[in-house]
Image (cartoon, rainbow, N blue to C red):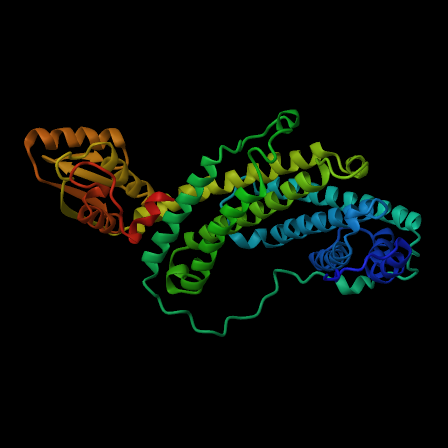
Length: 435
């Protein structure tokens, strides 16, 4: 019979370990009590590191499976979450002037953000007061020393090194900008498809929003998509002659970065709310956490600040994307065969409309000189009826070269149907039609 590799230790033995591993984390309490706010990003980075270290130690020893240590573990986890949120918001505030946003409400955003930072600072201190009380109850001796304030001096974002690297060669930059703008429109469409209420809401109406509508999974999905846009922009567009020539592009990157950071806040706030505040975890710990952190405050911040401004910046970025696409899109025409036997009925019409929607640029069917909107199912079927009556075997499409490329490929596969009108497999190059 195999012996277990895990040894169960007594609470007394664990206390000796906890005394050793908690000292750096507890020194931060002394610092918070003695230093005036506001705290810097550098401080929050340190707080995140120390809270993660202590939380890992507690989790390694299953502290939150123990009645005596459960609440202490929850307090450490909450502080870690608040530190993450504060760090991201501080980062946004420090970088905000460099994003070149055409933001009429910039002052309002900054003022609201600073108010939330103050709330976060107060809450972290309140949580640390409970950590102190819980430490004394558990028998942990508090450290006498504190942290060096000079270690957390913020580096001003206004200071920078001079450019000494030659500008990148223009690598078909206009096509890449058009691609990024198209994908940005798809992100906005995905955001809207979640049905997130982007206006100001009464907190009483938000109690069931997490996780039913807003959750970590959805925010991470959008963050992944937007992060790819930012990476593509930075790799191909930054420091190119095109970026220097077109001042809109730096602003466009700002409208990529702001939603990315704000969605990261959604991720951490929803995690904090669902895992640590509005929970039915062991014993009275959840009630004790709720006594320190009002759940309605977290919902208010997330929906009436973070989600509200995420939508505002995405909406303005959408308008800028359309403006950029109008200039950077290469237009062309092509003549293609119509779907065999059944023509442009629902399935092929829907695939054509999806291509038009994916690229977000104007795409039309031209029949007898009249143009039909290829992004509209109704418009396509109207054109399809005329094509059938006239007995035409081909149709002309006019629009974005990228969309026409996909339509040519779609036509080769008979618009996703076999000759009997059954669904057929499309090539991997058209996989974006199903996402």
